[in-house]
Image (cartoon, rainbow, N blue to C red; front, side):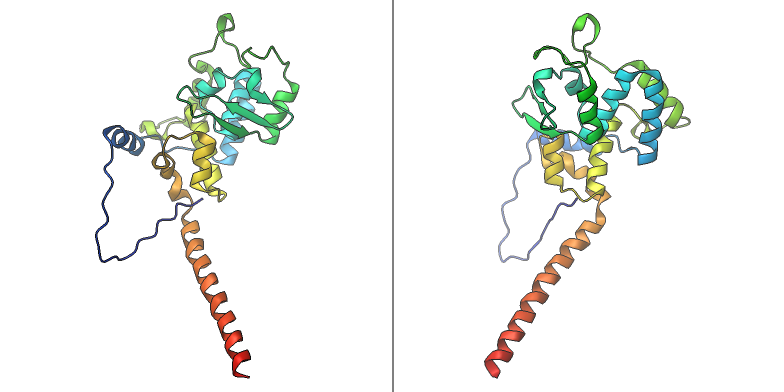
Length: 231
């Protein structure tokens, strides 16, 4: 995944857009955000451990890992938002930035097996059938035992939000564009997503190689055309 930034020398100085206070605050917060994500092996260990402790917690974690959903989005998910046939989760955002997220095979299997409730019923109801407000303490206890021993930097500690961060990191490492990751995760700005750009340094080289290929192909066409004309 790559963010392509091209700089050109111009005879004039372009106007620099002003960054609003809210956006500046958001960017600063992102610079201090958690940087830990799970390896494939770590994710497997976490899921196996959770599955032995709580099926519901295992399912929530798998959904966040594979679809990049926030904990609050999972808590508020209703059956009307689940399209098993097409493998889509329709995420509703309070600010109007709704999005559709495709399920992975394992996530789709979860919803196939689960007993479906009424359209407006929560998929993962909390106490009194209301939406939960935080993830079970069991998750953090297991994460601490598996990954957080002797970790003092809070950014390096595994928490439930690490699952969403992991989903984004995996996508970037597999070459998914920052633009697509932004849409999947529902980031308000591309600046939020750009924190993951360092995970795909080779993509910058590929971008340069792509330009070289285009230039080379064009030169070859011109050479062939010149030879035909000369003959």
